[in-house]
Each structure stands twice: as structure tokens, then as C-alpha cells.
Image (tube, rainbow, N blue to C red; front, side):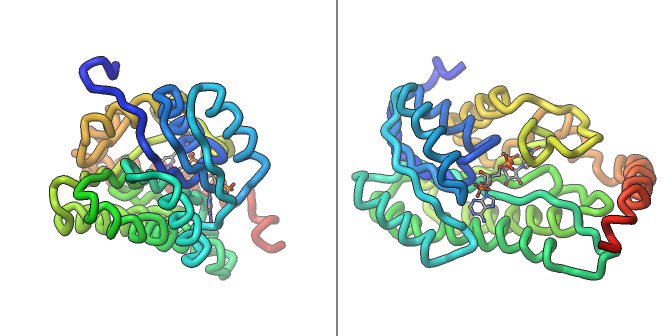
Length: 266
Ligand SMILES: NC(=O)c1ccc[n+]([C@@H]2O[C@H](COP(=O)([O-])OP(=O)(O)OC[C@H]3O[C@@H](n4cnc5c(N)ncnc54)[C@H](OP(=O)(O)O)[C@@H]3O)[C@@H](O)[C@H]2O)c1
């Protein structure tokens, strides 16, 4: 329900727009006739999504970019800024969510996750700050996770990366003038390519529903948005719940690890 808010077309830069949350958030803003930069590595997927966004009313620029690459990300940002008079929203959403598999003795996957989820966010957000300060307005939204509050077995790098993003976002909010809003989005489980292989997904919600909730939270300039609502309780009582649910998660993870033992030795 966006009726209470004046819904205007906006200039928006979205990373991780080739699937999942980023894709559906792009559709929501397209319905408002926004000008949107869609960024991700998979060019073909971006082109298909761009067509759908345009059919919904958006003006689209696509950038096939890897957010871990500081220079090409900055080039995309500069190009988009040369096409729009102001930047209204940066939606730093690109992310990787994989298991650590520390048993394998190889930190590569963990490092990739930290690189994408933390350095990628910096590469996306920071270059916009001088422009936002100049225009004295703007909104920075970063997609964290409820994992930034609770580190389940096997997902230390993911939780750690989202923990870092929570700290970065909190500090940004306190560093910038209040005319520049900063929102941390903390989803629980949302249907997407990332969560499709996951077996246990408590309180799972659909991608479109999640995108609508996110956009509503951004309209309200929420500082932190944890959803679906059940996760607010988990976060509030996380120490207690971690003691009880942590054991259950550990058992599940042990089973999963044993089942995948053959992959580990590959
Ligand atoms: N789904 C959930 O339950 C959930 C829960 C909590 C938090 N989140 C967070 O929500 C965000 C979106 O995830 P999702 O669930 O929508 O998963 P998804 O469908 O896998 O989307 C991830 C997006 O990130 C992009 N991406 C990954 N690495 C990239 C890189 N190096 N450079 C540029 N783009 C990159 C992917 O595009 P390309 O592969 O084309 O580059 C894709 O568009 C992530 O930050 C994730 O951690 C999701």
C-alpha cells in the first residue's frame, strides 16, 4: 500500500538485478515510471529483465558489471550519473550466499562471498556519496540479512559479510546528513536462485511479496527493515533461540556435511 506516499518516478541504481530480490524490486520501481540502472554479471538475463521493466513503464540502462571490480563498477556509476540529473536511490543488493565448507580446507568460496557482499557494497555505494552530498538528498539501501544477527553452522563467511555490512550501514547513517537516508534491509528467507537449493527455509516468502515489502519500507525511509515479521522475534531473542535452535541447525548441518562428504574430497 503505497497510497499514503507520493509515488514519483525515481532515478535508481540496482545491483544484483539479474534475478531474485533485485529483479523484483526493479519491477516495482518500473511501475512508477522510474529510470533504472540494472547491474549484474549475466548480460542476457539483464536484457530480458530490462525488456519487462520497459514494458512496465521504466527507462532502463543495463550494466554488465562485477561489483567486486572497483573500477568497472565506478565506470558504470559514472555513466549512469551522466544520464540522470539526480540519484534518488542506490539499492546495493548483489550478493552470494553459499556454505563455507571449511572441511575442504579451501577458503576461496568464503573469500568470494566476503569480497562480493562487503567490498561489492562499498564499490557500489561509496562512489555515489559525493553526488548525494552535492544534491543534498538521496537514499542508500543495502541488502543485509537476518544472518547478520545469527551465525548458523556452515555459514560463517556469509553471516560475517552481512555483519560487516550492518556495521558499514550503521556508520554511514551516522556519518551522512539526515537528508541522505540509509536503510539496511534484512530479509529472512526469500524465494530466489540463492535459496532454491536450501532445504530448511523457515518463514519463506515469495520474491514479489518480498520486493513489495522492501519498496514499502524504502518509501517509509526505514532505518532497518527485518522481514518477514517472525524474524524480528528471532533477532530479539536471538541469544536464547540460538542456544536451542543452534543445536538443531548443527545436527542438520552435520547430516548435510556427511551427505556431501564425497563432494568435499573432490
Ligand atoms: N533470498 C534470501 O532468502 C535472502 C535472505 C537474506 C539476504 N539476501 C540477500 O539478498 C540479496 C539478493 O539475493 P537473492 O536472494 O535475490 O539471490 P539471487 O537470485 O542469487 O541474486 C543475487 C544477485 O546478485 C548478483 N551478483 C552476485 N555476485 C555478483 C557480482 N560479483 N557482481 C555483480 N552482481 C553479482 C547476481 O547476478 P549475476 O550472477 O548475474 O552477477 C544476482 O543478480 C543478496 O545480497 C543476498 O545475500 C537474500
